[in-house]
Length: 329
Image (tube, rainbow, N blue to C red; front, side, top):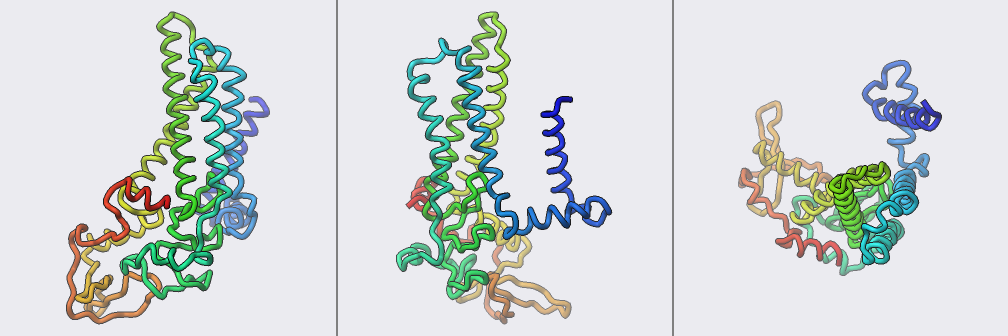
């Protein structure tokens, strides 16, 4: 085993022990990892802030490696099989645009609750299912606009918060949705082209009775793996956009649906939404779906919701394209 292989195995082993440590935190040896590595590095967002740059650095390093490997080892082998358009336009443009959109997404921050204008807060109404007026962020101490969420990493309330993207170490929300989508789809398009084109060239080598160069096959396999990852991310993101949701809201809507399936979601006669519970005395208690409201309510007229069609998503514009434009405006 070479030193490089040993180093890779050692790093993978350390990462594995780090992430299984919560499940074995009471064992003598792994408890050390949990206390001195997992808690400060993974759980505490205030310590070791450099850790958030690891994934972006890994991505750009991997991308540069693929580009160098292509021009140094693969391109000379398939030069005559590439068209003029591919060699001098599509491939160079893709190599430039893919990291460019990633850097733009990294540098352009989304809008926050501290910087929104009156027009911004009016853009989305409070649906009174997931979002409620007069709700203050416990961390920022400012009113939470509809569709906002506090990011523990960025330590800000992000407008139309989708998620904190580890690939660019930035929150994705109103103000940088477009750049994020361009980054994601550009990666998917580039990897699709590279994987399919190299596969075609590989098959042509075989049809001609020639041996397929190892470097060509290796790069094709790598691009195919990255295509699967990027394609899966893109598909999942498009599904969420089609339904007029953000990644953050998807989890909330799932909770609402689970409450409905358990016959615990009710709607009062004044169109407010509540969760019903039966206490130890057999009495039914009602609590608002507002996570910030801990009051107990008494309801006399209400409807138990048993159909998902009765739960409106006022943020859904009705189509993938309309929702996409709404996010990117």
